[in-house]
Image (cartoon, rainbow, N blue to C red; front, side, top):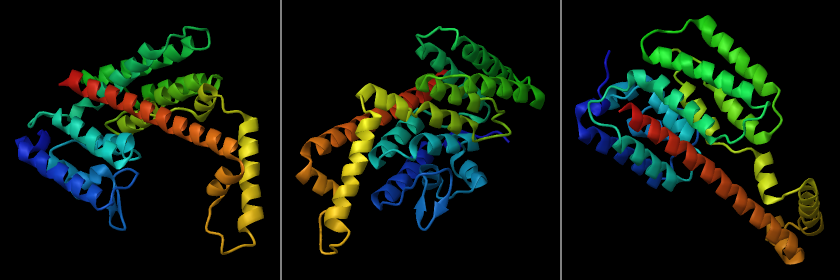
Length: 289
């Protein structure tokens, strides 16, 4: 069955975004992939008013893989970012467009973006590029209507996994995980696009620590001081209203200031990685038309 985006009506998109905004205003958006629980919904489920994929497709005229892509890529973002990113994505889709067969094209574009990002051409990275090229070729074949065999997907996945296992650098290893996740046929595994986007939008903790300069000694000292604040002021004093972080600020302001700076840096790096994944996603969707 051919799908027509928003069933050919721009008003369908407007209504879907209104559903999402209503859930957001009620504080009822949750992280995850296409589910409803205790009154909360993931962004894609909120758009359709249901976690049922056939309902998503029938209500919005959009393929199921796009629902998972939205949830994997956006659902863990702050509410205002979920709204902005989802609106930007949906407003770039022309009513009546058929996106059913575009999943492999999106994955191919994401893989191309990874190769573009690397300045490193070391012996460690070259096998990763080869695995990436092989997986991308399978997606290009799928786009052309020549479906690769299950054995071809398995072989590409095995090669990517073996390559990833040999890597040491946390940044390279994180992107290798994204390449590894791409080695699935999105027709049979509709979560593939979303999983690739999720991994594309992550940044390793090791990389954050290295960029900031947060060390094992920093971590140990902070944990020790927080435990000390609890044991000294809270454990045997149920009337204490201050939490361990407030006490840390009072008794060890230098440690609290460094922890706060580190936390802000973490959040900024994670937001930057998520934004980069969103940019790649939007570019891929635009390229495919």
